[in-house]
Length: 209
Image 1: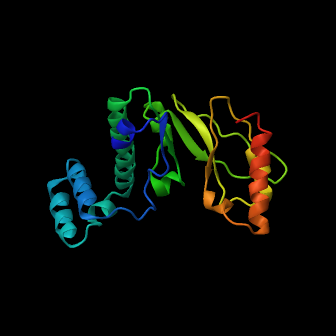
Image 2 (image 1 turned 180 degrees about the vertical axis):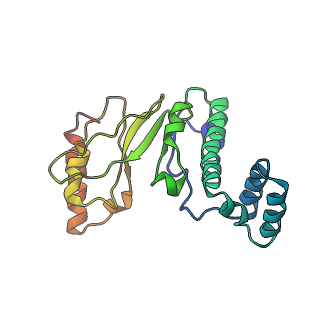
Image 3 (image 1 turned 45 degrees about the vertical axis):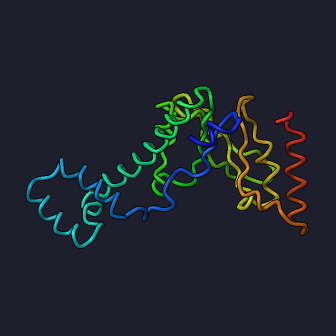
């Protein structure tokens, strides 16, 4: 709220929205919330047994219903985005909101399909991986719904020789290319200088993108 109300910006990009890994978050607050949700579907005997286990271990309810636990965590991420959107729209109704995905949905519990179908974000940045060093990577398929899809290139994890093909990736006029891991461009060693030059050359030849 403070950023969008005090800063003259055109959009807000969320660099990381999901869980860091599939083992998060088994703390008291989320497992208690999940327990309350799940109890509505359980018999009295199962509630009693699981409550006894829950008093000893916060993993009792998640272990009893792992698919429901995953759905719960996925809904928490989507709910967070919905609250952020509501907050910024109250301050700046026309501000663009975009979000990046960071890994497999089974690990991060990000759900870009729902974000687009529910019009929660205006754009989603999806990782674009190199297919080969001499051919552009296949395009990222569009999401159902309203969100634009922006290619995300991780400079820290992409070999220098694969950068030209990735950066030649054709994108619509209203799309952006998100470059991540900019620290990989810092330095004056030979590989870093080559990487810097390839990024410059790709953008200079990319129609002013």
